[in-house]
Amino acid sequence: MSESTKSRSSSPSAPAPSGHDTGYAKSTAGREEHMTRLATRRTFWARLTLIGPAFVVGAWQFGPGNLASAVQAGGAYSYTLIWVIAVSTILMIFFTDMSVRLGIATPVSLITSIKEHLGNPIGYIAGFGVFAITLMFSVGNAVGSGLGLSLIFGGSPVLWTILCTTAVGFILLFKNVYFIVEKILVAIVALMSIGFLTSAFVSRPDWVQSVEGLMPQIPAGSEILVVALVGTNFSINAAFYNAYGTKERRRTAEEYRDVTMVDTIPGIVAPGVMTALVIIVAAAVLGRTGEEATTINALATIFEPLAGPVGSFLFALGLSGAAFSSMIANATAGGTMLSDALGKGARSGSPTAKTVIAIILAFGVTITLIFQSSPVGLIIIAQSLTVLVAPVLGILLMIMSNRRNLMGDLRNRWWHNLFGIIGLIAILAMSLRLIISLIS
Image (cartoon, rainbow, N blue to C red; front, side, top):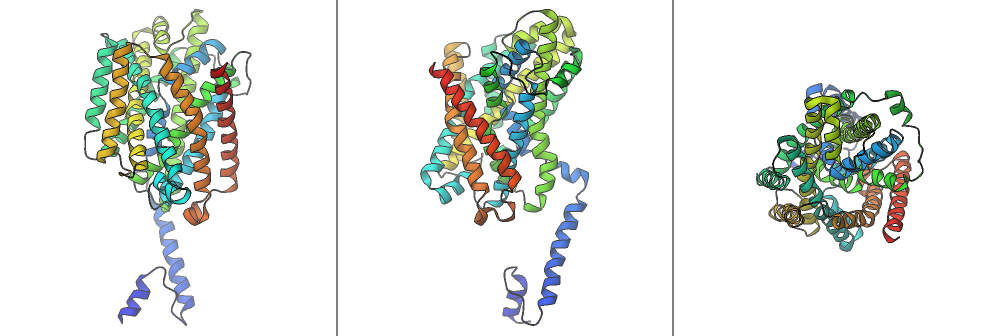
């Protein structure tokens, strides 16, 4: 066989040899059929190896702010706001799915691709915007992890905050940072799920009313809380980061369907279910005792007389796990995306990413040490930044995932765009409502 013939036969983009169109078509169809069979034959255990990136997203989404708003929702409005979590979870799945497909289709990282297609300034806005959000949220994560562990083991919350931050810093020193983080967070999410599910059954809620809570209604005075629930459960910045996890795991188009079934949907549904369970526990416990609890730790304390020390321990363990896992994911995401925006590498193990991760962790623990409590001002700033950045990130995901020349067969279909538009309307309405509340 000549060299030119070899070249034509080995190159998938070479035209079919003249006079052999039928044979060439059969060969192409054969290769496609073979890939289909490989995808079909993937075993159950092989599919489980695809679990990971979306659970990192879920761990970042499911943090102290998420839990605090859920406790307030259950305590003040019983089961009536569970529907907000259901709707937010559905919208979150669609935006996370866009991010998955972008991670598969783009030859480079997401922010680098945005810079190439839409200009450097847009990429910088995305990278620095996410970094600013993670910097502010690092404080709540630091405080939440310390309070949760002190509730379980006793001792100073500040000391536990320092120990948690040190542990996270140690984890992020390893070479293959992302893969280690992913495994830790999948395990923590699984343990939290067990803890909150057990807590819900122990609290003996009214399950009929819980189901009725899926019917949309906005009780008088709950508007701001609805905004908070949407903001903490429909986290576009977390969905945006999923493209990086997908790229780190080198997912392919052939794996997309299985990834959707075993990672994207379960990884986003898990924090949604846990948030709903926290609302259910708060509604059941506070409704039975008649007491009030405005914080997750106060709820855990009230929960003990009803559930006993084991039930209270499981609930408190879930709360501390949420703060700790969010701390890891928050710092990793912020460091990775700012490093990418600066053109210094789009992997969490790059030197620049690790430096930014250290800055985020140090900021959280430093502010905690200075104020000895969660500074409300920083939380408000974080909410304000989310209001400004989240719609931009959502629009970028929509624009990029609709580019035919970039996405090919993985571009958005009409139903992706429909739910994407609904999500953007929701996030823009939330932003407008929150801006008005901050100004007034």
